[in-house]
Length: 614
Image (tube, rainbow, N blue to C red; front, top):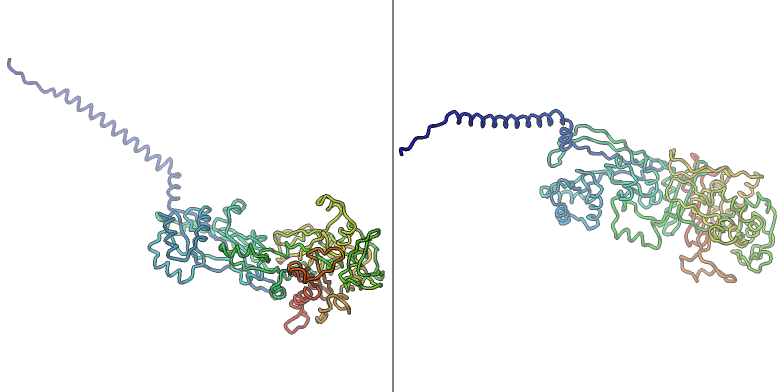
């Protein structure tokens, strides 16, 4: 059978080729349609969306920190300023291995574990592509050393910034306070946008109280960056608004005199201008250097301050609550005159003790043999006769005495423009019933009459009550900042007396404290102006009935507190002062000279003459 050659089917092949070509063409057209559709979506429909995302990859908004307001005394002496410092900062987004980089930097520079721990805390709060400080206040040598090794550390740089500085750190620690790093608790309370470029916030004192004014308003700049986060150019900028400067009533010369007067003692001095409530000086000792806290205090330094028995962190001026002792007698005496339970000429017999009717308990006078048989109002104030005020307080009663003392700010918040003020205590029968679940006893009234027992006052309250007294009852709100816009506490009504002459009786007796032959403050009589005052001492430990106080039997910290209040000049008061020296024992000889030093610093010029510009 002969083999038959197959005949080529050209038509079938052409059909197959055409169909394949058609399918391929349709596929190409479909692909082109998808590409065109996607291109249309990217370039037309979703242009704004992807354009914005692209800009975000290369354009960043960087907040600009406002310059914090300055603080000066009344004469323009700088008390809180901003200084340029250089910090070693890391930008996490530009570093491949952050932990390894930190360890290498520790080997290169003096960076301790406390610095590293605080760095990681700050890192949790930072915004993207913003540098976070690892070490503050680099020295010139450290800056030079890092510059040589700069090529090894991507994302690490030396950044200049303004840092808070207190030229007189210890002198104003409790008044001005300090700023510190914003912690997690504060992060939840602040305006995060306004603090976007700020690491610091006021922690204590005026820095805390006037934080809103001092901080200012944050600024912004839009910058273009490369893929590594480096800034290429600034596209737009809104400048920050600096914080407001604060000028204080404080006189730096007087503040320094008060600080030096207290020296190594534990205590407080507060001086007020009776004419306007301006705080001329406010000191609490011992003190501390506020600059230690600005960039984070070391554990060692903080532990030393926290654990010190002398409590340098404790603001005695506002938070120290002490029995006012005999410094309250001018107010108690004035209450007695007003209520008619005593007169300027009425006399009592002082054998050195007093007993309530139908009681054998003896309330002792500080002078164990007494002040004699003819003790009148002036003599009782001049020599600080306790028996006179026992009798006066018993006749007056605790509620009347307390109500009258409240008018002079005792047992009340003063409204001073500082945080954390304590209220003190002016007790009443109702107070004891609510707080001690007990009835009030007549003997407690006697103790209150000489500023002991439950009664407590802060140095600010004592200075304020003295200023109100010197002002013939005109109420004041103590202020550190001039022209403060911060709302004052609810103002109390002026003290109105039934007999205006009662003021003069009390003022005259307070002058006798200084100029009387047996006045407890007679060591102060050499001043070239006339002053009025009252000494006081307050027991720290109770002495059993029948026993005498023997200082040698007690440790220094168990000795009586020494107090003194004064105002001057007596005929035209321009300054009122309160002094407390913890365990100083004698108000007239220990606290009194310190009050005089403060008044001299304010009232006298460099030639020792009375200033004419006050």
